[in-house]
Length: 120
Image 1: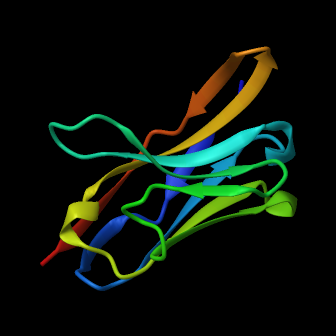
Image 2 (image 1 turned 120 degrees about the vertical axis):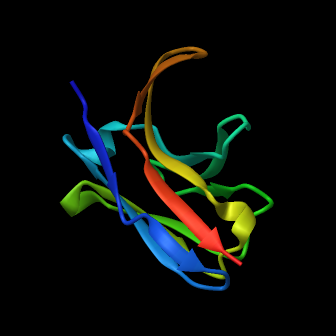
């Protein structure tokens, strides 16, 4: 069983920064993709950023240029550096790990989430 534990959330003023961390209970090299999602009240969960096992990254348009995803294989950690935060970034942020099991099939693991609140 894979466990993902997020940390680093909190309350920050607009234009501030936070770094979220995701600790995996197993080697992150075993995942095809790891990512950060967020869910604001009354909204659907959305992808914020992802990183592949080959270190390719992808970002939502709303966070490009402000957020950076990275991984540390030695520590089994994935990070999300968030700069120039905006009130609309307020959400619960979830770490996700995806393992491809076959053509078009795979399995996702989720952390419990960490709250990020940005005040104006």
